Length: 599
Image (cartoon, rainbow, N blue to C red; front, side):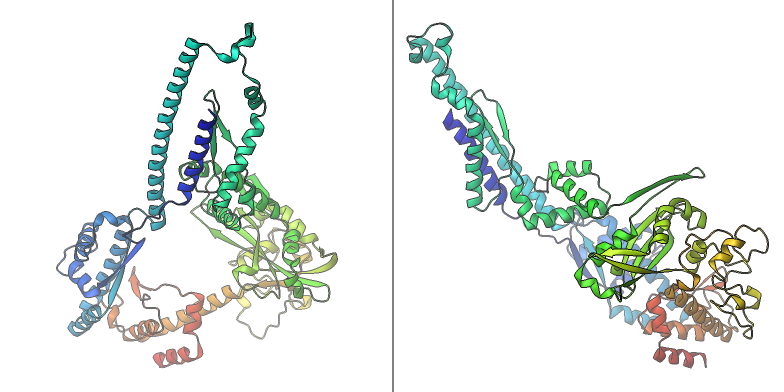
C-alpha cells in the first residue's frame, strides 16, 4: 500500500509538470486582419448602379463580395462588428458622391480619380476573439484530454489494487494470519506496531511527503499547485499548498494587480471571477485577489454616500482631502512643492450627464506648481456623486467634504506643519452654484460684481472684482442677500464655502477660450454666408456658395477632412470645433489665411 501512495504522488508531480510544459497553440488567423480595399472598387460594388446603397442588405452583399475577392472565409470574421463600420463608410461615400455628381461632370470625374488613387483599410476581427484566448482554449482542451487519460489510468490501477487486496484476504483466510499466532480475542485483529505507528504519525508523514514533492518541483523550476493522496481505506486526502512562494513572485503580484484593475473597470463581482477561475485554473486565486483589494482599500479609504432626497436616491463616494494631500506630499520627490512652509491647492468640480436622468458631479484636488497640474495625472479625484449640479443637492450630499475643506488650514507632512492656501476652480455654472449665485439668464449673473447685463456694453462704467465701492461682491454680502426674495442681486442660496474669498475663485480658462473661439468662428462663417446671400440656401445649392466652400476647403487643408457644412430645417449647420482645432484655426499664420478668404 505504501507503493500505491508513492505512485499517486508521482502522478501528481507528473500532472504539475504537464501543466507547466504544455505546448503553445498557434493561430493561423490574427486577432484583427487589415485588408486594403481600393475606394473606386468599393464605389463600383456598393454604390454604382445600386438602388439602395445605404441599406443593410447591400452592405451584407458588399462584405461577402470583398471577403470572396480576398479569399477570406466568413466563418473566421466577426461580421457583426464589420457591418456597422462598412455601412457607415458606404453611407459617407454615398453622400460625397451625391454632392460631387450634382456639382458637375469634371468635379465628379476628378473625385472618381481621387477614389482610384486611395485605399480604404477594412479591419476584420476574428470571430472567436484574440489569439491569446484561442491559445488558452486549445491548451485547456489538451490539458483536459491529458487529465482524463491520467484519471483513467488511476482508475484502472485502483481496480487492480482492489483485486489484489481481495486475493490477499482470501489467501490469508485459507492459510491463516501468521501475525495472529499466540494471540486471543480482540488482540488477534490488531495491527502490528509498525502499522500503528504509521497511523499515529500520519500527519507528520503527509507534511514530509508534501515538502519532498515541493522540493522536487522547485528543483525542476515549477510551482506545486495541487497535491492529492489516498490512505489505505481509499479515503481521499487533499493537502493544502501554501502561497508563500506566490507572494514572493513579482510576476504573480503584477498579474494580481492587473486582474484587480480589470475586475473594477468592468464591474465584475468576486462571485463572477470565481466562476471564471474555476474554468481557467491558471488565473490568480480568489483569496489573493481579495487580499489585494482589501490592501488597496486601506491605502485609499473611501466614505460612502447614500442619501434619499425628494424620493430619489443619491449615491457616491469621497475621500479625505487631508489624507490625499499627505499621500502625495510624503513623497520626497514632491518636497519642492512646499515653499516657505506653504502649499497652494485648488479644489475643482464639474458636472456631467451619463443619461437622460443620470447626473454626476466630480471633485478633484490640484497642487499648484506641480509639473503635472495641468494634466490628468495632476488632478487627484476626491469625490464623485450622482446628483444634479445644483447648490441644494451638493450641500445635501457632500456636506462632510465641504466642512473638511473649509476647516483645512494646515497639514502635517513628515513631522512638519505646512500651511495651506486654498483656491476654487471650475466652469462658471459650477462656481455660481458653489457660491450661491443663480443662473446666467438673470440680470445679475456675474460671480464677482453686481454689473447688470443691460450695462455690460458701457465701457465707461468702472467696475472691480475686489473693491466693494465699485460693485464687487463679498461672501458676507451673498449670505445676507440669500434670504431675500426681492432685490437680492441674484443671491439665491448660501455659499457652500466660507473660508475662500471671491478673489481666490478662478474660472476655467478652457471653457472661456472655447466660448470666445466659437463666437469668433461663428461671426466669420456668418460674414461668409452674407457674401453668398445671392444663393438660396438649400442642400442642393450649398456647393454654389463659393465663400463657404473656400472656408470648408481651408478647414480640410489643416487636417479636418471630415468637417463640412450641411443644411437642416433651412438653416446652415456645422459641427463644433475642439480646443486644439480652435488653436489651429486661430493661429497667426492660419488666421492670415482666413483674412484673405473674407477680403
